[in-house]
Image (cartoon, rainbow, N blue to C red; front, side, top):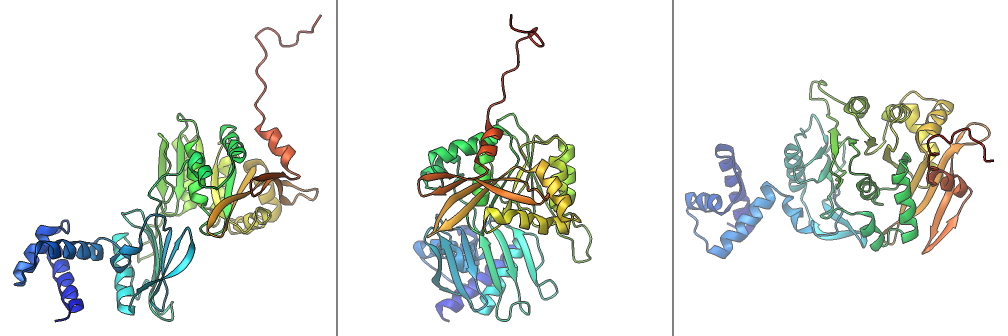
Length: 397
């Protein structure tokens, strides 16, 4: 028997053993399974086999070795090629999966995330116990083999100081970001895929006052916020009979009953934007979320498209946004470096159309002011101190 066949045989035996005796995949279990098969190995080989089997049963299997520090995404294409995204950008790795290996891995990870993945339900989007965000598509929706996308959580929680030290923005921009949080300005963090929107949003919310209650609504749990009072709500997909689904729209409505100081929509992707805008227009200041957009100037068009899914026409959405959201913090990625590129102010033009006016734009270490700079400065200016008691209405002699 070849080494690959022996490994596959051991893996099959361990899986069968787990069915009858659930529990951890550890050295005693592997030793017992090998003994039952009449196989004797040394201590070093036993440890190696245990680690390999554990990766295939509980971890990412053949992809486990690629999940190193700094890696944000692991991607398996339909041809079995495996790609890794890290600080150096998206690159192909030497790992290659057969069609059977890719399908088995996709089905196992979907099951670990509590979702069904088979010919009847050929796609799945789940959050794994390890914190990894998982998405997979099976043939015939993919012409070749299974397509797997894994978004790995960061092993450290970034705060604003750490992001600044990593080159995401300058100290001066950091002060503006802190002022946005302190003034409880409602904002959106925007950018393309992999630009660090969730990391920045979590860092900004970490800077909120500790006595604020933050309610986070997400489709898949992704935001990890180092704050003493955070509540998470996660949507639920319908079962195979089409029942039991709970979408983001319903969760935003539920969040209003939870005494939130800040309502956070992890990612605005559909008609739930209407509920968020209504929530932020009912006295819930400091709300925020993320939106995919190529530039800050594209955000109004993106919001109009999302609003249309929620039944809002262009002018109705502009009226809602103008009083519910004020600032756009836009991120970009150049040569593997994620940086804050622009801060813009949302408002309406003379025709009532929603626009984003640049307030600050970064150019290396320089900060360039735009047409929205004055409006942003006025919004972030400290509120005037209240007049002393008994002085209201008095004139100076």
